[in-house]
Length: 412
Image (cartoon, rainbow, N blue to C red; front, side, top):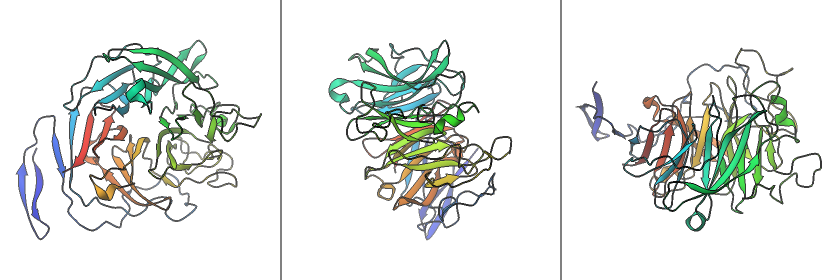
């Protein structure tokens, strides 16, 4: 099959046929216009006929990247990769759901599995999940990761840490530092993303486990399901957390009322953001503030998979509950996310990039004054379930897919 590539200036364009090369493939985006589009990128009918609470909360104007950029596939041989982090030398440390961690170099060569990890329960949405390097990794070589830990009573989201050996063949000093509660017999909604803040405290996203029995626990401050928690490197509650002095709440809780948050990132200005799955509609982008309630399952812009409304009655806004900055209907299925802080592509500065699973594209969001003012879909023609994304040291983006591919996106 042949593709047509554009060659020439905007005032004089002609087409040349191009036959695709075998993998690793190298594709180039050459923008057709120097002007942003104005129509929203979403054209499909929403699942729910709910109205947004404020203008610009969904389906904002589309935008188009003006700078030429390119992407290629470094490898397609990973097995269900889930999380990605960049080592100081530029290589990538990647988790695979079955319980394996590997290192991939700049040419796509994949290391043997790194041994020493705790056992995971890799069923459905469970397994080895997100990871993050210690802020002092260059000197202490510590790595933190989330995983589904099996027990005799079910499973739960757990956090472990370990020291990457100098030969990079194993982890030593491995310890499980945190376990979410309660344990549950289920296979869905684990959350599983991690990020360090400027005070070296670890923020972890935890899902509400999906089932009707556990769904209400997103509002229960005695449970960590449906929460973002904030802990020390040893897994203890951070001393200045919002509920530290509340005897009726777990002190590690940072925010609550979440469904299944799989994205978390700090804006370059220091604000904390998270994305989470809705049901049929209602995927959310939230600006996370300590102690705030984000509403699930009381308020939502989604409906049940059966088509029924959620809750009695279903509402989209309630006093004391935060509104999403942005929501999607139909869904994006948002997983990993990162803010762009590099200089390689200047127009991406401070933009947010979110990987989409069922939507099979990467969403670029332009933010202004904590509002979404533009949306673009990237790599949509690839047809991949994009799982996680990070910014590299040289202003490139690295993203992984459920099918086992590792992409690099950079300026042309």
